[in-house]
Image (tube, rainbow over the protein chains, first blue to last red):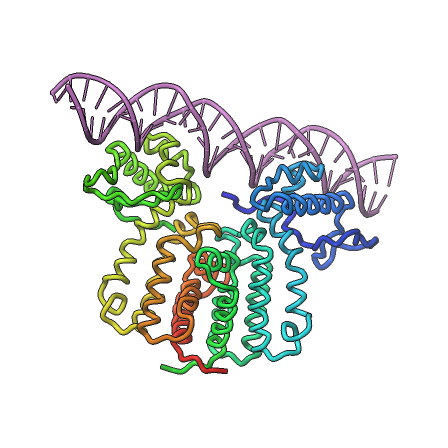
Length: 225
Length: 225
DNA sequence: CACGGAAACCGGACCTGAGTCCACTTTTCC
DNA sequence: GGAAAAGTGGACTCAGGTCCGGTTTCCGTG
């Protein structure tokens, strides 16, 4: 299928920061710094994201075709794919935007979610916040769902795993914290949360309580059997 | 890379028909119920599975198109899709066959994997067996990967969760066993195992040890905090 | 056993949407 | 001003999936 694309453009290296084209002159291509984005490219990227956001809100993520996005943005299909790589990439970009507030919440926000509270308290709050956030943007998450190849390399997901691992360590967890964190974060997989809610009819309360139990197990000392 | 598949012509008479909630047909023509599968349909199903198996072994699951399968089976494309619903369905059918021996192993086989051993012992063996099995057929698993909608309803996966939950209960686990089992089984997601192995370079030994730790945590008593 | 009709099945033309390609245009920088 | 780099757009390819007229199988009937 899609091997590595010979495209020079990777997935969105920068967030859609409107009109943040700082005039930097005489910049030598040192340190692998990305060269400034061209004006037309920036304009089109914003157009595309705007159009995509609008269409998704209007028709649901599943029913939005790439061509429709390109047309709505008055831009060629090639441009769309150049910017975002593929459909998944576009959805991921939208998702990244939707995740901003949530991410700020657990990275920088006030306790108990943010820094300042006890690690255990933060872990509990993190699970609850994540589950609620997922349920809010589930439509987009399911559309952006990375099939196998990317599922565990999506930035947001990697960040979650890292965050959980950090808190686990701070909470004094022992054992293979990395793997435990990965497993714990797996509980927060959008598709799983969706499945448990819709197919298995589990309540939000149960899902949150389940998270707390898993956290408790994760930080518990290991009794050598 | 290449999964060795058992002989294709002996596939189970049952196969998932994803397109509709079809009533299970039994073989006995009693009470005007259950029309059996037509002879030509059966013949073509076998042809298709045979051809698919061959092509997958030859070119890798990723590089096999549905049309190629249909052509190789000397059958129309419509027939292929009628039988298996979609590409995923076909891969799932192949996978189901590839899983047979593995499933027999932990359901009916000899201890420590099968019945007879202590639950904890069986849990440990189950993880190791699963990880090894996944790595063997990874090619097929990744191709058959159910994107979000089906990921948690694939028969093999559901069976694993159920099995783990049963063993956890037998081992005297307390708490929300269902959710813990689901999470534990999440560690055995093919895509995750593949990711940890290839992207993160984890050794088979570490993955197996990780499973054992998770099992230990899952059956540990819950200390009320 | 021949017959006949209904239901299941077949197959390949056709449609759709993702992703690619490349000749052409715009921007940037000197 | 001008060359090179970056970006553009839409025609094109390709694979998954649908549709429907024609065919085959099944089964009850005479």
